[in-house]
Amino acid sequence: MSVFERYLTLWVGCCMVAGIALGQFLPQPFAQLAALEVARVNIPVAGLVWLMIIPMLARIDFAALREVGKHWRGIGVTLFVNWAVKPFSMALLAWLFIGYLFRPYLPADQINSYIAGLIILAAAPCTAMVFVWSNLTKGEPHFTLSQVALNDAIMIVAFAPIVALLLGLSAIIVPWETLVLSVALYIVVPVIIGQVLRRASLQSGGEAGLARLLAILQPLSLVALLATLVLLFGFQGEQIIAQPLVIALLAVPILIQVYFNSGLAYLLNRWSGEAHCVAGPSALIGASNFFELAVAAAISLFGLNSGAALATVVGVLVEVPVMLTVVYAVNRSKGWYERGLRAPSRR
Image (cartoon, rainbow, N blue to C red; front, side, top):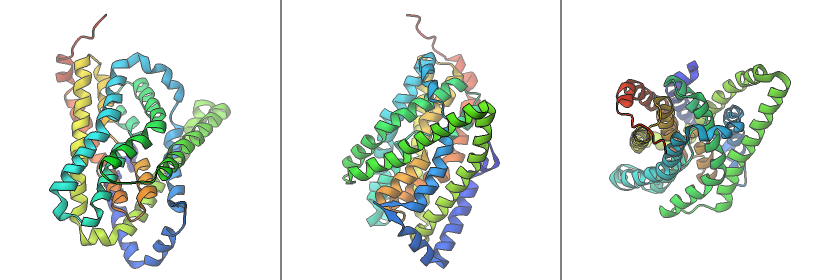
């Protein structure tokens, strides 16, 4: 884990302070940046999001999809948690906490937007940081790679329908064309560009060439993430200053869903007889979010200064510390996990 990744929460905090300060003292430049839109897509943010996402997708080897059958129990558990549990559990938590319990303490005109942001955050499984979490739990690398490749392939077709369904159930209407455009811009096109870059670097320099490319792109990805956060907090500054409690309240359902989904995936793997080196990354993939995509989709659907964008940014804020606690729990419980491991059926 790099210094940036290890202290991502600190950097996000610094971006929060810097963004709020710049938004208060330089409102005109921020307003000009917000106005640079085409079909509701903010051009500066779209460029930054591409710089965030493409390096991550260049790491994915879709040939690893051939390996999915080797750890079919772990794959099945993770798919179940990622696509059948996590988006729906987050929607329920958002409705309960943001729509009901915390409603008196939040701006009334942003309630639906906050709920939408939390749903978008949970609708796409993590792509990049999962490799870090897997390494920290001594996870099976081939399982992690094949699971991420499979999730990315599913995300192309499943992200938009799941988001549309859950937002519709929340009585939040979003235009389908904007949602489909978000999927094309922030999933399909980056996947194509990432894979083209990957193949070109492998053909010209082999694995060493790919490593050099990723070494160049990864810092750009992190800088783009931090620059995007400065913009978002610049636009959200007045709301945050007026309602400082908003950040903490939005973090509550995110924290609950991370621990619930990671625990569920971990226990299901144990019950199914899967090895600990698969159960660890499965739990982490099941709990973490593709927050870069979530931020981009929330901005496209609801705008830079929306509650939805703020909710996804809170996901970035809590991602590293909460996932490190999950890593700790997985590592500490290895003995317990293996003592109670159910022998897989031979039939």
